[in-house]
Structure formats: structure tokens, C-alpha cells
Image (cartoon, rainbow over all chains, first blue to last red; front, side):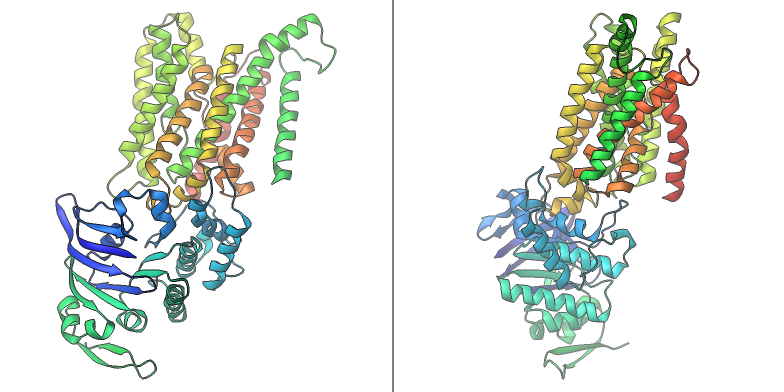
Length: 256
Length: 313
């Protein structure tokens, strides 16, 4: 479990996040919503200790994150970041296997178990048969799925995903969210996902946190958070709300 | 991979044997006369072995720096690391001439300082791009060259000629001690780089990425900079600035074995040794009995390839 207690984060003098508190319980998916520049990516960076806190505290299973070694954090928390590009000819399998770094020693090669983890992650992301293809020959969407596969291959209990569906087609967007939710339910993992798609958030989130100017504007279940008033306040957009006839969850339609 | 490794070692053996035999005085591989034996053990063998160590050193440093800096164009010579080492060696040569050990020590210090200077200059808040890194390397290289040229005014004419040759990359002053030192440095440096190879595989994609996946980025950077400075320092102190080896060799190795640094680093060591011994054999024999500096031969091969790489990127 990840407990976030009243944290503030800033770049130099500029405060980007302030007074943010929430709990990420095992098996749950939290979706972060907010306009560009609201502090979502900064929050993800703070959650895996990439950025130092200016105040407050984050605890992983009761232990302060700042006291835990880099390797130990990486064993527990995997990140899917926004940008991934390399000028070197790296194959898909090599890339996914690099996610097993914290499970091996420095000189060592990956074990059969590591390869099995990678193969399974690739299959889960609909990438079987891509093993020997080069990363820089893939489309943006394919690369994004490989990056997700690497995060899954780590076996980490907490997944932090920064706009993982940005380049994905409709089918793979749903696949990605379904995969993350299944992971959370079957392995007692948990996830924090940034997205701009309010309907995907409504379908897959156990809890939604809306950020505006680095502060929590709303927090709760999709039905509690996705109200016309909240959405107008955070995004400045008028919306119509009704019920998705297929799932029974709230459905958001923008009014232009 | 075993096959490729085996073939590389076979090629190294062939090149070494050819280098032993060819030269101003042709030597047989067996049944050497007393005079031929003296040529082999006192002159030719130290030179060939030093060439192998220098080639391996520059190639592994190139492989390590390229992965660390996420830039296939990074190379000790182009980044100014070799010139840093050259300036260090020269300072030792001018001010501590009787203390031979100060040359590799100051070369190491010079290489380390140049590496850190280029890294600091190339890194901005937005990160580091190819152009910025190459530009920083050029600035540091030209600045250090100017300092070296100014220092040469302190040398007398005879020393100046041998120094100019050395500066272009020259193996003709090889000594047994130089071979021991370079060999020790390249073994230690390669082991350090190999110990960081898995981390470098992640660093190739991005520092933030590597950090997220458990790499202690600062420690890896320090070890790779340290190991590169060590091997380049030892190589330059012994043989001057042999250029382009660190650029071409890791690039060719990657074309054959892919980008996994656990293969790229050791294979670059062997391929680097082959390349420099081969180039030096040309340098010794092309206009025999006169000689070319080996650095001129590696640059003649390396410069066109560098332009090709720049255009392709």
C-alpha cells in the first residue's frame, strides 16, 4: 500500500504540488485527471521518489519512501513514462528484459524465469512475435505497448502509468486498461494511471483524483467525481452526463 | 555469439601474427636469428602488444561513453577526453620529466577533468542532445589543443618532433613498462565497464528511465567516467591521441551483435585491438623504412565513416 500524506513538490522556487493526500490500497486502480500542467506527471515522479518532496511524506507498506534504496523501490514500483526513444538498435525482447534489472546481479544474464516473465508480458500486451523486432522500427502505439510490457515484466506490485494510452488505437486503449485492472485484481497489485479520457476513467477507475493547479480538486469514486460541476471547474468545459448503457457507469459527453 | 567471439579471437591471432612478421625487417614466425629475436622482443612485440591494449582501451571507452551519454557519436577523441589526457601527459613531460609515473597519472586526471567538463557543458535543464554534446566536445578539444600548442613552445627542436609525432598517435616509443601499465588499465577498465553493462542497457534509453527501473544513475555515471578516464589516460600516456577507434569499433560491433552492452563491451575490446594493430602494421609498412603515425591511419579510415554516421543520424 502507498500512503501519500500531505505532500508538496516544487521545481526550484516554483511549487507544483501542494497538500496532496491519498491512499493507494492493494488491488485498486486510481486514475489521475487534470488539465495540462496540473501536476499529474510531477505527482507520478514523486510517487516513485524521482523528485524529492518539499514537505509531507510517502510511505510504501508503512516505510518512508525516502529511506528505501533505489533498487528496492524499483522492485515494488514500475513506471511507464511518457517519452521513450533510443538511437541504438535495441530489440523488443532486450528492452522488455531490461525491466528485470533489479532481479539480477551486475554481471549476470537473465534467467529462464526472467525470459518467461518477459514473454508473458509481451503476450499480455498483444506483442507475441515482436521479440526480435527493433524498437526504433515500431510505430508509436506499438512502442507504447512494449514500454507497458516492460513495466509488467518487472513483477512490481505498484504500477505508475503516465498517459499510457496516448498513442494507442481504440482497441488497445481498452486492452491496456483491462490489463492493468486484471493485474490489480488477480495479483493484488495496484495502479495510478494518468489519462485525459474521462470515459476510460469512468469505466476502469476504482477511484479518481482530479488535480488542478497542483491541488486535489475532487477525489472519490467515478460517480462522485465525474460531475458536471467538477469537470467544468477543472477543465472549463460543459458536459452532459448519462449512464453508459453497456456498463452502467457514468458517461461523459462534451458540449461544444 | 560464441561463434562470433571465436572468429574475433581467430582474427586477432591472425592480425597479431601478421604484425609480428611484417615490418621494415621481415621476420619468420619460427627459427629466428639472434638479431631477429632482438628486433622481435625489444621493439616489435612491445609495440604490437601496446597497440592491442590501446585499441582495446579506446574501443571499450567509446562503447561505455556512447551508452552512458545515449549518443552513438560519443568517443574519447571527439569528446576531448583524449586531449585532456594528452595535456596531462605533456604537463608531466615538461615539468616532471624524471618521474615517468607522473605521465599516466596526470593523463588520467586530465582525461577525467575533460570528461566532466564536456558532460557539464552538454547537459542543460532540458537534457542532452547530440549537437550539444558534439559541440561541447569540439570546444573542449580545441581549447585543450591550444594549451598543448602553447606548451610545445617550451620544448627544444628534437623533443618537439617526437612530441608532435606522439600527439598524432604513435606507438613507436613502446616500452615494456608501458605495455604492463596499459594492459593493467584495460583489464581493470573493461571489468568495471562490464560490471555496469546491464545498467548501461537501461541508461541507453534514458537516465530517467534507468532511475525508474532501479539503476543508481549517479554511481553508474561515476564508474563509467572513471573507467573511461583510466583506460584513455593509460592509452594516451603511452601512445598519444589515436583517434576514431572508440567511434568506429563499437559501432561495427553493434551492427554484428546488437546493442546489449554485455556483448558490446568485451567484443569491442577484442575488435579495438584488431583495428589498432592492423592500422599500426599499415603505419609501419606503407612507406617503410619510414613510418606514419598510427593515429593518421586510424583517422584516415575513421573520418569518412564519422561523416557517414552523422549524415545517417
